[in-house]
Image (tube, rainbow, N blue to C red; front, top):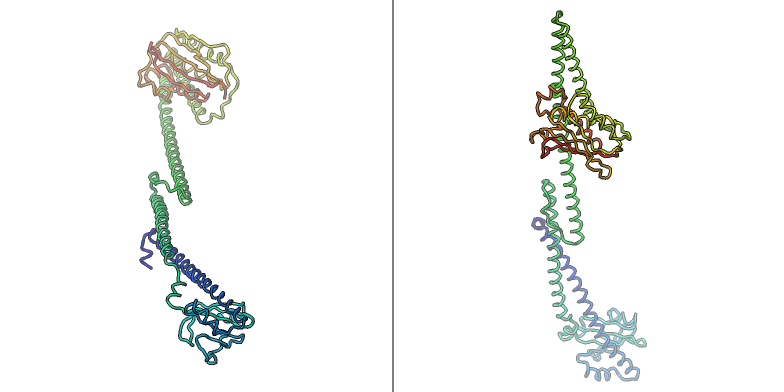
Length: 481
């Protein structure tokens, strides 16, 4: 038993199939052997019953038993004839002439009992103590008299009643075919089980399952393929969740980095105006006898620094609001043309600049958005061109309207910027020329505000150098929320 459990699953399964097939075949063979032997015995009994009928008819004709026996033994070799009354006493026995009184009562004989009960009966083989020989008996009840004929159960009769050997060979062949089919079936089933075992081992080790071969197209294979598919989807879902978690973690870390960088930049940007204001005020306080003109100039410079400080705080607040609470920003139906004119055309006049601003826009540009943010887009782009481009002309034009999107271009004819700066122009506090930027009074947040305002209005923005010189900004705005 221990060696049975140590064998492979296929071997154990095949042995069980072999045992089952052997028991089934053996039982069928025994049943069929008994059935065929009984069938042949019934055929022989039918022949003897016909003989019994003839004997009964001849007895009714008044012929003596001895004469009847002598006539029929010539055609039936080894025939034995016995006449028995209803009480079991032997009236005549062809093998015991003149000594019937020595015969025992025959009521206990099976063929006699059956004849008395149903009219006829037979016994395939029984040893006769009277003549010391085995016989096949067939008995019939006719008008209170039991007529019994018998044939010696010798080698010839045994062969006649035996099962055909060809049938046995046929059953052996079928059994062998069943074993071959059983081996193939158990082999296929064992392969499925082994694949499932490998699959569960991979599950336990957390390995990939892409190299699992497909299971056969049957019920077990369908269930197995479904299990593998479910686990594959689970693996992919877990991998996606891990990637999303890692992406969210990186995003959160990036936000922390940006906030830290923003805090450092804000601290750095605040130092300049605060230090300037403090320097001017300390100079005034430490020199009471300072000339009036110098005092006034220092106060004006301090005031300019406070304006710069105020603008920086406003820009920081605007950027933070767009990034962290865009849902709190109100939107309304507007005409974009007046906002662009106010933001772009009046600025050169205020700054005393000689740069010409040329507009190529329709009179009506309906849009739903936030007026302050839309104004800041064109205001900051115009201010950026005035302060840093060195050009003489700024063009603001609508290139096309595709569905609910406007596509704008803001381009100057200045010197442009070096290519390695282009990818970072929209970063907070990024400056191409730090010294010049601070001298011009910029906060370093203008283009960052532009980008966030464009994104808020469902668009995107890009910047590039023009082949003919200067810088151009291409961006879209959605006319509806």
